[in-house]
Image: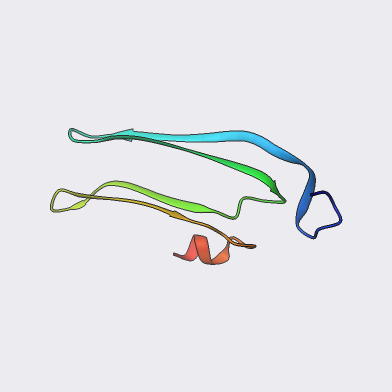
Length: 72
């Protein structure tokens, strides 16, 4: 990749951030890694109880910028 492409770094950021949670019905774990981009552009939702016994899990890909992924 390298600096020739705007928004990319010389080497990937391989640090990972993990998120875990559980309730009486479910247990989850997710992990994110920034990679070649200059900053994290993706976002996610992990909500074990949105009411009526339902849960919500979603991943939003930034596709070149974090604004929409964070808004959603």
